Length: 237
Image (tube, rainbow, N blue to C red):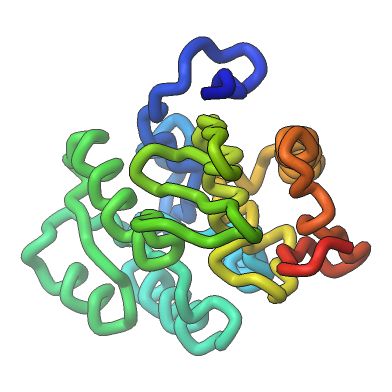
C-alpha cells in the first residue's frame, strides 16, 4: 500500500471535524455572528453569492425585521440559480409566528436565537447533504482503477492509494460525473471551501490532485477547460 498523501501542515489522515463556512445575513440591529466561521454579508451581496454558487448556505437573523427577512428568503427561492441554496432562519421563538412565516417563505429550517452552536452545526451538516451528498460505494474512474468511498482509497490494479479527505472529495465529485464540465464554484461547494477563502484554494487542490494522479498515470483524465472549469474524461487528453 502506498503512503497517505496528507494535507500540508496536517498530521494523519483522519476525517476532520465539520467546519462549515456559510453566509450570515442580519436583518435588524448588529448582532454577533452565530458561528465564528460564518461570513457576514449584506442581503444583496449574499444573494449574489448564492446565485453564482460561491456560497451554498445562509443563516439569517429574523428577530427584528421579520418582513424584510421573509421577503429576502422569497427573493432567493424565486431565483432559479439559487433554488437549491440552504437557508436557515434564526428566530426568537422556533414555535412562533415568525418561524412559521420563514418556513412558508422557503426557509429549510428554523433555530432559536438561544441555540447551542453544536445544534446549528448539526443542522447545517444535515442540510448540506442535499447540496453535496456524502459519497457512498465505489466509482470506476479508469480501466482497472476504482475509488472507494468507505476507505477513501484509489485502487489502481494491485496498488491502493489512501487519499486525504479534501482530495478524495475533489476526485469523487469529478469522477461521479465523467465528461461533465464542473465549474470552480460547484467544486468549491463540494470541497466546502469558504466563500471568503483565496480564489486560488481550489486551483491549489486541483494541482495537488494532479500530482497524485500522475503517480498512477491517471493525470491525463483530469482536464482543465480555461474559463469554464474541470472535467474527468474516460479518454486521457
